[in-house]
Length: 590
Image (tube, rainbow, N blue to C red; front, side):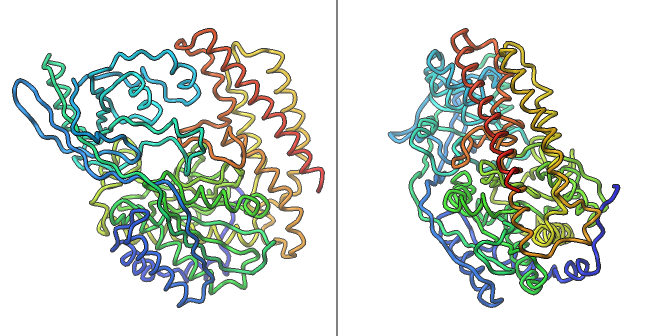
């Protein structure tokens, strides 16, 4: 591990102060409520946390945001085959369309999801010429992303029947919406009117087997979804030194859940509460304050609460936020794997140290992570742990070849599915991360790692038909910037010098300038839209704005569409160069 940090005596005392009994007590109480955003159960959970803060003397406030939420109410699926009718258990999705006037019928037809584009830009390019070749049909597929569903609707489908790819017969709740948080007016077109039903893999395979044998399958579907504006509560707390201009660490965990959500995300909420209680006792040792927010609107609003917080606290997050620590689904039964380090490249070495110190495992960087309430990427805030423990590959409790559990987003997500030992271990990881980031952040950041990741991504592009002059211009600008940036990296204190950490408050000015340079580069690394908005809630690769270079080779594009895509890419190239210039200007002020 090289010059890895070792918890000192002070940190070991801090870790021992985190009590499992207290975490378990919080979890038991929070997981006793059904906490769908906008519900009475969520309000009761907020009241419980509020009472804990008052008892411990922790500063807090509650702010309410108007957001668009969507609640699946009911779904029915009947299949007719050879004169027989079969009722199949199904669920619909948040932001699904409704049948409204009554059940709808259509012929079941299996289609290849690979024939559907999953990217917003490609969809925008091809949607004008989509044929209505699915009229009278209910296309059957594995789970689709929202952009693929929009294509089915454009092609005249009656509904979308989606089949979960896990072995369990439990049906998971979910959301069909590519919009992150509250939509801008021009984004309203991305909400589908197509009814969506989800069934388990077993029933899907049974139906497909009949279809493969030549049987004519007709489906009758009914969906009901309540979509509208709600006022959601968002509880924010703060411990440590006070000061409106001090840098701060942000911790977040979504309080709302599907049903009682013991492990998604009652465990996360319980750890955050216990971290705040512990740091309140150690407040005099913190150099900077730690803010914690319990998000609402995560499950049925696509991160609506954290997105609203990012919008309303834009300047503070840009000027003062050191990093964002996210707690989601810690303490799962069987979650023994800590190898997937979901932190920003500039903080991944610090995350690696913490995981090794607490668990003895050696993790590695995974990739840029989209989702998981990462509502601060457009602003450029560095993620420091998006998750901690996960189910190891091939674990019997996992679903659909992921590290998600088979009880995730179901009525079964109850207390027996958490592991107290894993929960405490995760708690120690998050506590140490918050403490170090709030005490000596300069020792944790390695911006050269971010530079390396951007450089590697640029080198991986197949520039192909992209104008060579523009390609050369961008790469030259990047190499010149990269060479000049190296000297500024020396301003950051290496981890091996941690015991000589700065304590003077006036040293934070230079640090924040350096931190803002990282935020500007993060905007390129994670996003393609402006800093004051949100990218789509879809999977994205590093440097998403330029990554669409690969789509220039897509055979589905016409020459005109390819030229439009090239126009878009040149704009993204200009954005890249402009951001480098802004970063250099920021550094020049040091």
